[in-house]
Image (tube, rainbow, N blue to C red; front, side):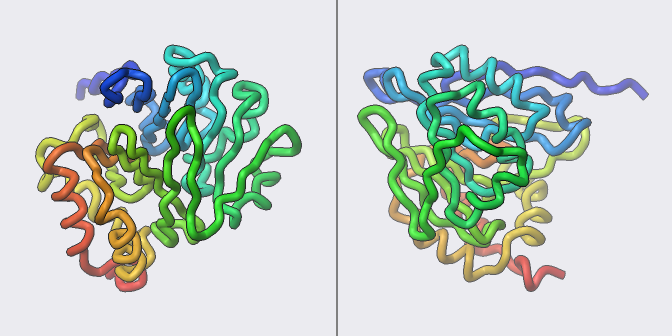
Length: 257
């Protein structure tokens, strides 16, 4: 059997404001990472000469992520790193942040800040604890909203909304697990993609009540792209399709069979 080629995908600007001063950047991906652990997406939001890094990932992807960030902004202009929750595929590289992004504040749920020493963090972090109700994260001339998504799947979990480009960074909500040898950045065939999402969402998300609470918080947001930490981006009509699919999902979490 011939092994399938694993491709390296370069970072690029997915969306930007009309004047080009505010950008949403997907930071690339190496498909070979699937042989080490689950594939993850990392994102950067740039406003002028400041940037916010979102869910930078574990240690084994950090070098690639750092190089990709440096293509768009000087690392000392990364003023914040946002962690949706505490999992190692999100926060495993956090001990490297003070050295490589020395001016970055760390935004993380107040539930998880006291656990950071267990990830090898001793000193050097400027931590902003996100309260359960969420907060605004300033970036340049704009701000992003940390939207509570508790128990989806972490008890201290946040999604992040960027109104300047209408992007919702959804963390593990919308995650997909691809079969070996398959990966794509944008969802095109929604029904096919749903088959890659269902198992994760039914097992990892706590319950339908938690899903409904999050959906009520995001239903009035103007969303053009949903960007999960695993899997593919939902754009255009697939944003509505995904939210409707999630609302109708049965047998979730405690009721998973």
